[in-house]
Length: 302
Figure 1 (cartoon, helix red, strand yellow):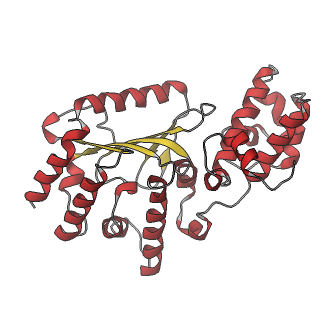
Figure 2 (cartoon, one colour):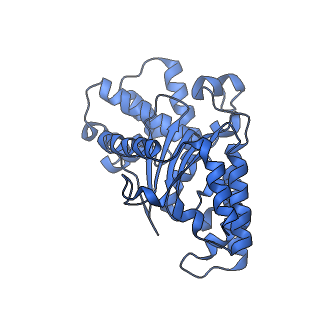
Figure 3 (spheres, rainbow, N blue to C red):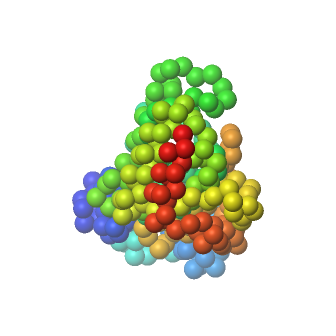
C-alpha cells in the first residue's frame, strides 16, 4: 500500500468523509488516537506501561486524545508493544500517523489562530453535527462578513486592518462545511440578547438577521431562539458547543469558549451533562419553525 491515498483507502479509513476532509490532520489524529487507546486497553496495559516507548506519559496522552501528530517510529513501537501482528492494521495505523502530521488548510492563517482554538477548528471541519448555544453573538458559522468584522474588531488587543481582513476570511472559509456535498448539520440555540445587540450598527445587524432568516430554510440548519421571557435556564453559565463525528469510533467533543481561552471537558460524565443541558434548552425554546417569525419581529422593531 503506497503513501498516496486513493479513494478506496480513504473510504476504508474514514468512512463517509470526503477526500478533502480526510486528508487534513485532525481526523487522522483523532482516529489514530482512539485506535491506539483501544489496542492498549485490549492488552490490559496502563498508560505508564506504554509511555516508556514514546518518551513520556504526557506524550502518550496527547497522542491518544489526538492533540498532536504522531511520529511514525512511535506508532511502530506501540504496535510492537501491543503485539499488533496483522500487517494491514499496522499499515493503516502508520498511514494515519503520516497524515496526522500534514498541515491543515488553515496554515496560511496560523499566526492569527490561538493554540487553544486549534483543536476545535480542526474538529469543526470534520464534524457531522454541531450543536451550540450562543449567548452574546450570532454563531461564527452563521455570520455575514460585515457582522464578523464588527465582532472580531471589538475584541481586546490591537490588530491591523490586514490582520482583521485575514480573520474575517478565516471565519468565512470555515463556513464551507455548510455548503459541501455532505454538509455539516447545524442545530443552534441563540439567546435573544444576541439578536438585540446591534454589532456593526443597524444596517449590518439587519443584514445579519436577514441572512440568518434565509439560513433557516436550509435542511441542514435548525435555529431556535431562547427568549428573554424564559428567565432562568440550564446554560446560564455561558456558551456551549458540542460536536458529533461522522464515525462512531470517536466520542462527542464539548467546547466551552471563553474570552481568551477554552475548556474541553473530556470525562464521559461531562459530555452527558452538557448534552442534557442542550436537550433541555431545545425543549424550552420555541421550535425552529417559529424562528423566521421571531426574526421578522426583531427586524421590524429595528
